[in-house]
Image 1 (cartoon, rainbow, N blue to C red):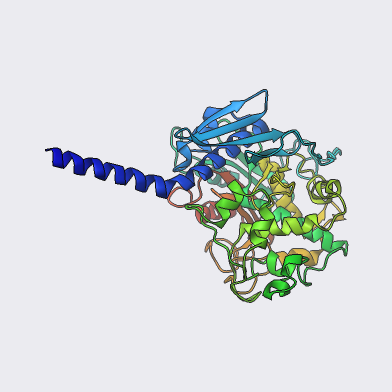
Image 2 (image 1 turned 120 degrees about the vertical axis):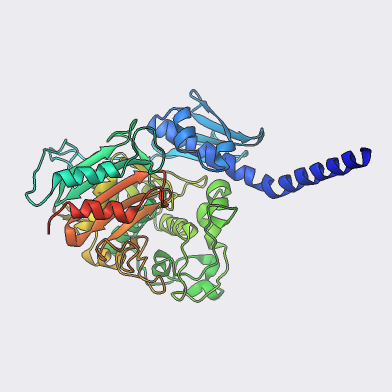
Length: 449
Protein backbone atom coordinates (compact mmCIF):
# COMPACT_ATOMS: atom_id res chain seq x y z
CA UNK A 1 0.00 0.00 0.00
CA UNK A 2 2.84 2.39 0.86
CA UNK A 3 4.53 1.62 -2.45
CA UNK A 4 1.29 2.38 -4.29
CA UNK A 5 0.88 5.71 -2.49
CA UNK A 6 4.45 6.69 -3.31
CA UNK A 7 3.89 5.91 -6.99
CA UNK A 8 0.59 7.79 -6.93
CA UNK A 9 2.26 10.81 -5.30
CA UNK A 10 5.03 10.73 -7.90
CA UNK A 11 2.46 10.63 -10.72
CA UNK A 12 0.58 13.58 -9.20
CA UNK A 13 3.79 15.61 -8.81
CA UNK A 14 4.91 14.84 -12.35
CA UNK A 15 1.46 15.74 -13.69
CA UNK A 16 1.53 19.01 -11.76
CA UNK A 17 5.01 19.83 -13.04
CA UNK A 18 4.00 18.97 -16.60
CA UNK A 19 0.89 21.14 -16.38
CA UNK A 20 2.90 24.01 -14.95
CA UNK A 21 5.66 23.70 -17.55
CA UNK A 22 3.24 23.57 -20.49
CA UNK A 23 0.67 26.08 -19.28
CA UNK A 24 2.49 28.64 -17.13
CA UNK A 25 3.62 30.72 -20.14
CA UNK A 26 -0.03 30.92 -21.24
CA UNK A 27 -1.09 32.56 -17.98
CA UNK A 28 0.48 35.87 -18.98
CA UNK A 29 -1.50 35.86 -22.24
CA UNK A 30 -4.71 34.80 -20.54
CA UNK A 31 -4.60 37.52 -17.90
CA UNK A 32 -3.43 40.03 -20.52
CA UNK A 33 -6.36 39.30 -22.82
CA UNK A 34 -8.79 39.41 -19.91
CA UNK A 35 -7.54 42.69 -18.44
CA UNK A 36 -7.50 44.45 -21.80
CA UNK A 37 -10.99 43.18 -22.65
CA UNK A 38 -12.42 44.26 -19.30
CA UNK A 39 -10.86 47.73 -19.37
CA UNK A 40 -11.95 48.45 -22.94
CA UNK A 41 -15.44 47.01 -22.63
CA UNK A 42 -16.17 48.70 -19.32
CA UNK A 43 -14.68 52.15 -19.77
CA UNK A 44 -15.40 52.55 -23.49
CA UNK A 45 -18.82 50.93 -23.70
CA UNK A 46 -20.03 51.02 -20.08
CA UNK A 47 -20.43 47.23 -19.89
CA UNK A 48 -20.62 45.81 -16.36
CA UNK A 49 -17.97 43.27 -15.37
CA UNK A 50 -20.37 40.33 -15.22
CA UNK A 51 -21.57 41.00 -18.79
CA UNK A 52 -17.98 41.17 -20.07
CA UNK A 53 -17.09 37.93 -18.31
CA UNK A 54 -20.20 36.16 -19.61
CA UNK A 55 -20.19 37.44 -23.20
CA UNK A 56 -16.69 38.73 -24.09
CA UNK A 57 -14.33 36.68 -21.95
CA UNK A 58 -16.21 33.38 -21.99
CA UNK A 59 -13.49 31.89 -24.19
CA UNK A 60 -11.68 28.69 -23.30
CA UNK A 61 -8.82 29.50 -20.88
CA UNK A 62 -9.69 33.23 -20.84
CA UNK A 63 -12.59 32.32 -18.57
CA UNK A 64 -10.06 31.17 -15.97
CA UNK A 65 -9.07 34.76 -15.24
CA UNK A 66 -10.25 36.54 -12.12
CA UNK A 67 -10.92 40.18 -12.98
CA UNK A 68 -11.46 43.41 -11.08
CA UNK A 69 -12.17 47.03 -12.00
CA UNK A 70 -10.90 50.14 -10.24
CA UNK A 71 -13.42 52.85 -11.10
CA UNK A 72 -11.47 55.69 -9.54
CA UNK A 73 -8.14 54.72 -11.05
CA UNK A 74 -9.77 53.72 -14.34
CA UNK A 75 -8.00 50.42 -14.77
CA UNK A 76 -8.69 46.69 -14.75
CA UNK A 77 -6.55 43.87 -13.39
CA UNK A 78 -6.67 40.15 -14.06
CA UNK A 79 -4.92 37.09 -12.63
CA UNK A 80 -5.06 33.33 -13.22
CA UNK A 81 -4.95 31.19 -10.08
CA UNK A 82 -3.57 34.28 -8.36
CA UNK A 83 -0.61 34.36 -10.75
CA UNK A 84 0.55 36.60 -13.59
CA UNK A 85 -1.37 39.75 -12.72
CA UNK A 86 -1.83 42.05 -15.72
CA UNK A 87 -3.17 45.58 -15.75
CA UNK A 88 -4.91 47.62 -18.45
CA UNK A 89 -5.42 51.35 -17.96
CA UNK A 90 -8.03 53.57 -19.59
CA UNK A 91 -7.30 57.04 -20.95
CA UNK A 92 -10.18 59.13 -22.25
CA UNK A 93 -9.80 59.69 -25.98
CA UNK A 94 -7.27 56.88 -26.41
CA UNK A 95 -9.10 53.87 -25.05
CA UNK A 96 -7.50 51.13 -22.98
CA UNK A 97 -3.91 49.97 -23.08
CA UNK A 98 -2.46 46.78 -21.65
CA UNK A 99 0.70 47.75 -19.77
CA UNK A 100 3.75 45.98 -18.40
CA UNK A 101 4.81 46.32 -14.77
CA UNK A 102 7.41 49.01 -15.54
CA UNK A 103 5.14 51.21 -17.66
CA UNK A 104 5.26 54.82 -16.43
CA UNK A 105 1.62 55.81 -15.91
CA UNK A 106 2.61 59.31 -14.75
CA UNK A 107 4.19 60.20 -18.08
CA UNK A 108 2.19 62.85 -20.03
CA UNK A 109 0.50 61.71 -23.23
CA UNK A 110 -1.09 63.36 -26.23
CA UNK A 111 -4.70 63.04 -27.34
CA UNK A 112 -5.94 63.12 -30.94
CA UNK A 113 -7.82 66.25 -31.88
CA UNK A 114 -11.30 65.19 -32.90
CA UNK A 115 -13.86 67.00 -35.03
CA UNK A 116 -17.46 65.91 -34.79
CA UNK A 117 -19.36 65.87 -38.07
CA UNK A 118 -21.90 68.66 -37.82
CA UNK A 119 -24.53 68.77 -40.54
CA UNK A 120 -28.27 68.38 -40.78
CA UNK A 121 -28.11 65.31 -42.97
CA UNK A 122 -29.75 62.04 -42.07
CA UNK A 123 -27.78 58.88 -41.38
CA UNK A 124 -25.63 57.57 -43.04
CA UNK A 125 -24.21 60.86 -44.41
CA UNK A 126 -25.12 62.68 -41.23
CA UNK A 127 -25.82 61.78 -37.64
CA UNK A 128 -29.53 62.60 -37.59
CA UNK A 129 -31.96 59.72 -37.37
CA UNK A 130 -32.92 58.30 -40.78
CA UNK A 131 -36.48 58.46 -42.04
CA UNK A 132 -38.27 55.35 -43.19
CA UNK A 133 -37.62 54.78 -46.88
CA UNK A 134 -39.57 52.11 -48.71
CA UNK A 135 -38.12 50.49 -51.82
CA UNK A 136 -40.62 48.72 -54.03
CA UNK A 137 -38.13 45.95 -54.84
CA UNK A 138 -37.37 45.09 -51.21
CA UNK A 139 -39.39 42.34 -49.56
CA UNK A 140 -39.37 43.72 -46.02
CA UNK A 141 -40.97 40.66 -44.47
CA UNK A 142 -38.20 38.53 -45.95
CA UNK A 143 -35.61 41.02 -44.77
CA UNK A 144 -37.01 41.02 -41.24
CA UNK A 145 -36.93 37.22 -41.21
CA UNK A 146 -33.30 37.27 -42.38
CA UNK A 147 -32.34 39.52 -39.50
CA UNK A 148 -34.37 37.56 -36.99
CA UNK A 149 -32.64 34.37 -38.14
CA UNK A 150 -29.25 35.96 -37.48
CA UNK A 151 -30.00 36.23 -33.76
CA UNK A 152 -30.50 33.64 -31.03
CA UNK A 153 -33.91 32.84 -29.71
CA UNK A 154 -34.47 33.80 -26.09
CA UNK A 155 -32.09 31.94 -23.81
CA UNK A 156 -29.98 30.40 -26.57
CA UNK A 157 -26.23 31.02 -27.01
CA UNK A 158 -25.50 29.60 -30.45
CA UNK A 159 -25.37 32.36 -33.06
CA UNK A 160 -24.44 35.10 -30.58
CA UNK A 161 -25.05 38.03 -32.93
CA UNK A 162 -25.00 41.45 -31.28
CA UNK A 163 -25.96 43.74 -34.16
CA UNK A 164 -26.92 43.78 -37.83
CA UNK A 165 -27.13 46.90 -40.00
CA UNK A 166 -28.13 46.88 -43.67
CA UNK A 167 -27.64 49.83 -46.03
CA UNK A 168 -29.16 49.80 -49.53
CA UNK A 169 -28.81 52.62 -52.02
CA UNK A 170 -27.53 54.99 -49.30
CA UNK A 171 -30.44 54.21 -46.97
CA UNK A 172 -30.77 52.23 -43.77
CA UNK A 173 -33.29 49.53 -44.62
CA UNK A 174 -32.87 47.30 -41.57
CA UNK A 175 -31.08 47.02 -38.24
CA UNK A 176 -31.45 44.81 -35.20
CA UNK A 177 -29.67 44.52 -31.86
CA UNK A 178 -29.34 41.81 -29.27
CA UNK A 179 -30.78 42.28 -25.79
CA UNK A 180 -28.62 44.78 -23.91
CA UNK A 181 -27.22 46.39 -27.05
CA UNK A 182 -28.40 49.30 -29.19
CA UNK A 183 -27.22 51.68 -31.90
CA UNK A 184 -24.99 53.58 -29.44
CA UNK A 185 -22.91 50.64 -28.25
CA UNK A 186 -19.28 50.64 -29.33
CA UNK A 187 -18.20 47.18 -30.47
CA UNK A 188 -14.65 45.98 -31.07
CA UNK A 189 -14.03 45.26 -34.74
CA UNK A 190 -10.85 43.25 -34.11
CA UNK A 191 -9.21 42.72 -37.52
CA UNK A 192 -11.73 44.94 -39.28
CA UNK A 193 -9.39 47.63 -37.99
CA UNK A 194 -6.89 46.49 -40.65
CA UNK A 195 -9.19 48.01 -43.25
CA UNK A 196 -9.11 51.32 -41.36
CA UNK A 197 -5.32 51.14 -41.69
CA UNK A 198 -5.79 50.64 -45.43
CA UNK A 199 -7.77 53.88 -45.63
CA UNK A 200 -5.02 55.87 -43.89
CA UNK A 201 -2.50 54.73 -46.50
CA UNK A 202 -5.06 55.45 -49.22
CA UNK A 203 -5.31 59.08 -48.17
CA UNK A 204 -1.52 59.48 -48.03
CA UNK A 205 -1.27 57.96 -51.50
CA UNK A 206 -3.95 60.32 -52.81
CA UNK A 207 -2.03 63.25 -51.36
CA UNK A 208 1.11 62.06 -53.15
CA UNK A 209 2.96 61.72 -49.85
CA UNK A 210 3.78 58.03 -50.15
CA UNK A 211 4.60 55.60 -52.95
CA UNK A 212 3.49 52.12 -51.93
CA UNK A 213 5.54 50.50 -54.69
CA UNK A 214 8.85 51.71 -53.32
CA UNK A 215 10.78 49.69 -50.70
CA UNK A 216 9.30 50.11 -47.25
CA UNK A 217 11.15 52.79 -45.22
CA UNK A 218 12.60 50.39 -42.66
CA UNK A 219 16.23 51.16 -41.84
CA UNK A 220 16.81 47.71 -40.31
CA UNK A 221 16.17 46.07 -43.69
CA UNK A 222 18.54 48.10 -45.84
CA UNK A 223 21.44 45.65 -45.73
CA UNK A 224 19.71 42.29 -46.08
CA UNK A 225 17.25 40.44 -48.32
CA UNK A 226 14.29 42.32 -46.81
CA UNK A 227 15.37 45.59 -48.48
CA UNK A 228 13.14 44.84 -51.50
CA UNK A 229 9.89 44.50 -49.51
CA UNK A 230 7.51 47.27 -50.53
CA UNK A 231 4.56 48.82 -48.71
CA UNK A 232 2.44 47.22 -51.43
CA UNK A 233 3.76 43.80 -50.34
CA UNK A 234 2.89 44.59 -46.74
CA UNK A 235 -0.61 45.80 -47.58
CA UNK A 236 -1.15 42.57 -49.51
CA UNK A 237 0.19 40.34 -46.68
CA UNK A 238 2.69 39.19 -49.27
CA UNK A 239 6.01 40.28 -47.76
CA UNK A 240 7.48 36.81 -47.32
CA UNK A 241 8.35 37.56 -43.69
CA UNK A 242 8.10 34.84 -41.07
CA UNK A 243 4.91 34.99 -39.00
CA UNK A 244 2.53 32.66 -37.15
CA UNK A 245 -1.07 33.70 -36.49
CA UNK A 246 -2.96 31.14 -34.43
CA UNK A 247 -5.16 32.38 -31.60
CA UNK A 248 -5.54 28.94 -30.02
CA UNK A 249 -1.92 28.85 -28.89
CA UNK A 250 1.11 30.93 -27.97
CA UNK A 251 2.27 32.39 -31.26
CA UNK A 252 3.67 35.57 -32.81
CA UNK A 253 0.24 37.21 -32.90
CA UNK A 254 -0.77 36.50 -29.28
CA UNK A 255 2.65 37.45 -27.90
CA UNK A 256 2.49 40.69 -29.87
CA UNK A 257 -0.99 41.70 -28.72
CA UNK A 258 -0.59 40.76 -25.06
CA UNK A 259 3.10 41.23 -24.31
CA UNK A 260 4.86 43.56 -26.77
CA UNK A 261 5.46 47.21 -25.94
CA UNK A 262 6.06 48.13 -29.60
CA UNK A 263 3.78 45.90 -31.64
CA UNK A 264 5.04 47.15 -34.99
CA UNK A 265 8.58 46.04 -34.17
CA UNK A 266 7.60 42.38 -33.74
CA UNK A 267 7.09 41.80 -37.47
CA UNK A 268 9.93 44.18 -38.33
CA UNK A 269 12.38 41.89 -36.53
CA UNK A 270 11.24 38.72 -38.32
CA UNK A 271 13.47 37.16 -41.00
CA UNK A 272 12.41 36.62 -44.61
CA UNK A 273 11.18 33.13 -45.46
CA UNK A 274 10.19 33.83 -49.06
CA UNK A 275 10.80 36.41 -51.74
CA UNK A 276 8.28 39.30 -51.69
CA UNK A 277 5.06 38.85 -53.64
CA UNK A 278 5.43 35.07 -53.87
CA UNK A 279 3.81 33.77 -50.67
CA UNK A 280 0.64 35.07 -49.02
CA UNK A 281 0.54 34.82 -45.23
CA UNK A 282 -2.02 36.57 -43.05
CA UNK A 283 -0.24 38.59 -40.36
CA UNK A 284 -1.52 41.06 -37.78
CA UNK A 285 2.11 41.89 -37.17
CA UNK A 286 2.39 43.15 -40.75
CA UNK A 287 -0.48 45.58 -40.20
CA UNK A 288 1.07 46.92 -37.02
CA UNK A 289 4.36 47.33 -38.86
CA UNK A 290 2.41 49.39 -41.40
CA UNK A 291 1.10 51.53 -38.53
CA UNK A 292 4.67 52.03 -37.37
CA UNK A 293 5.72 53.02 -40.90
CA UNK A 294 2.78 55.40 -41.10
CA UNK A 295 3.89 57.01 -37.86
CA UNK A 296 7.32 57.67 -39.38
CA UNK A 297 5.70 59.75 -42.14
CA UNK A 298 4.84 62.54 -39.68
CA UNK A 299 7.16 64.97 -37.94
CA UNK A 300 5.31 64.86 -34.63
CA UNK A 301 3.25 62.39 -32.62
CA UNK A 302 0.37 64.89 -32.57
CA UNK A 303 0.23 64.98 -36.38
CA UNK A 304 0.20 61.18 -36.46
CA UNK A 305 -2.60 60.94 -33.92
CA UNK A 306 -4.71 63.58 -35.65
CA UNK A 307 -4.27 62.16 -39.15
CA UNK A 308 -6.12 58.90 -38.54
CA UNK A 309 -9.22 60.82 -37.50
CA UNK A 310 -9.06 63.89 -39.70
CA UNK A 311 -8.23 61.96 -42.88
CA UNK A 312 -11.08 59.45 -42.76
CA UNK A 313 -12.72 58.55 -39.45
CA UNK A 314 -14.16 61.92 -38.40
CA UNK A 315 -14.48 63.10 -41.98
CA UNK A 316 -17.20 60.52 -42.62
CA UNK A 317 -18.78 60.96 -39.20
CA UNK A 318 -17.45 57.81 -37.51
CA UNK A 319 -17.32 59.89 -34.36
CA UNK A 320 -17.83 56.93 -32.06
CA UNK A 321 -14.64 55.26 -33.27
CA UNK A 322 -11.57 54.92 -31.11
CA UNK A 323 -8.43 53.16 -32.35
CA UNK A 324 -6.39 52.10 -29.35
CA UNK A 325 -2.60 52.28 -29.06
CA UNK A 326 0.24 50.08 -27.89
CA UNK A 327 2.62 51.12 -25.12
CA UNK A 328 4.89 52.90 -27.61
CA UNK A 329 2.10 55.21 -28.80
CA UNK A 330 1.48 53.52 -32.16
CA UNK A 331 -2.08 52.70 -33.18
CA UNK A 332 -2.88 48.99 -33.03
CA UNK A 333 -4.28 49.05 -36.54
CA UNK A 334 -4.39 45.27 -36.67
CA UNK A 335 -7.02 44.76 -34.02
CA UNK A 336 -8.18 47.53 -31.71
CA UNK A 337 -10.78 49.67 -33.46
CA UNK A 338 -14.05 50.30 -31.59
CA UNK A 339 -17.17 51.87 -33.13
CA UNK A 340 -20.95 51.58 -33.23
CA UNK A 341 -22.42 49.23 -35.85
CA UNK A 342 -23.86 52.23 -37.68
CA UNK A 343 -20.43 53.86 -37.85
CA UNK A 344 -18.89 50.63 -39.15
CA UNK A 345 -21.52 50.72 -41.90
CA UNK A 346 -20.42 54.26 -42.84
CA UNK A 347 -16.93 52.92 -43.46
CA UNK A 348 -18.34 50.27 -45.78
CA UNK A 349 -20.35 52.91 -47.60
CA UNK A 350 -17.20 54.95 -48.24
CA UNK A 351 -15.72 52.02 -50.16
CA UNK A 352 -19.01 51.15 -51.83
CA UNK A 353 -19.02 54.70 -53.21
CA UNK A 354 -15.46 54.22 -54.51
CA UNK A 355 -13.92 56.54 -51.96
CA UNK A 356 -16.44 59.35 -52.40
CA UNK A 357 -18.27 60.67 -49.35
CA UNK A 358 -21.27 62.83 -50.11
CA UNK A 359 -19.45 64.56 -53.00
CA UNK A 360 -15.95 64.66 -51.54
CA UNK A 361 -13.39 62.24 -52.98
CA UNK A 362 -11.58 61.04 -49.86
CA UNK A 363 -9.90 58.07 -51.53
CA UNK A 364 -9.07 57.77 -55.22
CA UNK A 365 -11.28 55.35 -57.13
CA UNK A 366 -8.08 53.60 -58.17
CA UNK A 367 -7.28 52.95 -54.50
CA UNK A 368 -10.62 51.24 -53.94
CA UNK A 369 -10.05 49.12 -57.05
CA UNK A 370 -6.57 48.27 -55.79
CA UNK A 371 -8.01 47.36 -52.40
CA UNK A 372 -10.55 44.95 -53.87
CA UNK A 373 -8.26 43.26 -56.40
CA UNK A 374 -6.91 39.83 -55.38
CA UNK A 375 -3.26 39.70 -54.46
CA UNK A 376 -0.90 37.06 -55.80
CA UNK A 377 -1.11 33.61 -54.20
CA UNK A 378 -4.16 34.41 -52.01
CA UNK A 379 -6.47 32.36 -54.28
CA UNK A 380 -8.87 35.26 -54.64
CA UNK A 381 -9.51 35.66 -50.94
CA UNK A 382 -7.48 38.76 -50.09
CA UNK A 383 -6.81 42.22 -51.48
CA UNK A 384 -5.14 45.03 -49.56
CA UNK A 385 -6.14 44.70 -45.89
CA UNK A 386 -9.61 43.58 -47.05
CA UNK A 387 -10.96 40.07 -47.61
CA UNK A 388 -12.55 39.16 -50.94
CA UNK A 389 -15.20 36.75 -52.18
CA UNK A 390 -13.54 36.53 -55.59
CA UNK A 391 -12.50 32.97 -54.81
CA UNK A 392 -16.06 32.00 -53.84
CA UNK A 393 -15.68 31.48 -50.09
CA UNK A 394 -19.36 32.38 -49.78
CA UNK A 395 -20.91 30.49 -52.72
CA UNK A 396 -24.33 32.15 -52.52
CA UNK A 397 -22.97 35.69 -52.43
CA UNK A 398 -21.85 37.79 -55.45
CA UNK A 399 -18.16 37.35 -56.26
CA UNK A 400 -17.62 41.12 -56.27
CA UNK A 401 -18.25 41.29 -52.52
CA UNK A 402 -15.26 42.35 -50.45
CA UNK A 403 -15.30 42.81 -46.73
CA UNK A 404 -13.70 43.82 -43.46
CA UNK A 405 -13.46 40.82 -41.18
CA UNK A 406 -12.66 40.43 -37.51
CA UNK A 407 -12.24 37.78 -34.85
CA UNK A 408 -15.48 36.19 -33.59
CA UNK A 409 -17.45 37.18 -36.67
CA UNK A 410 -17.24 40.92 -37.16
CA UNK A 411 -18.01 41.81 -40.77
CA UNK A 412 -18.62 44.82 -42.98
CA UNK A 413 -19.67 43.35 -46.33
CA UNK A 414 -19.50 45.62 -49.37
CA UNK A 415 -21.44 44.38 -52.40
CA UNK A 416 -21.12 46.81 -55.36
CA UNK A 417 -23.37 44.81 -57.71
CA UNK A 418 -26.24 45.12 -55.22
CA UNK A 419 -25.43 48.65 -53.97
CA UNK A 420 -25.44 47.23 -50.47
CA UNK A 421 -23.47 47.23 -47.21
CA UNK A 422 -24.18 44.60 -44.56
CA UNK A 423 -22.72 44.78 -41.05
CA UNK A 424 -22.77 41.91 -38.58
CA UNK A 425 -21.20 42.13 -35.12
CA UNK A 426 -21.08 39.20 -32.74
CA UNK A 427 -19.05 36.87 -30.57
CA UNK A 428 -19.16 33.72 -32.69
CA UNK A 429 -18.29 33.13 -36.31
CA UNK A 430 -17.71 29.43 -36.87
CA UNK A 431 -20.42 27.06 -38.00
CA UNK A 432 -22.61 25.55 -36.66
CA UNK A 433 -22.82 28.66 -34.50
CA UNK A 434 -23.22 31.25 -37.22
CA UNK A 435 -23.60 30.64 -40.95
CA UNK A 436 -22.32 33.72 -42.79
CA UNK A 437 -23.13 32.37 -46.24
CA UNK A 438 -26.72 31.65 -45.23
CA UNK A 439 -27.13 34.98 -43.45
CA UNK A 440 -25.82 37.00 -46.40
CA UNK A 441 -27.89 34.96 -48.85
CA UNK A 442 -31.09 35.62 -46.91
CA UNK A 443 -30.48 39.36 -46.75
CA UNK A 444 -29.59 39.50 -50.46
CA UNK A 445 -32.63 37.42 -51.43
CA UNK A 446 -34.92 40.03 -49.86
CA UNK A 447 -33.96 42.44 -52.63
CA UNK A 448 -35.54 41.65 -55.97
CA UNK A 449 -33.19 42.03 -58.90
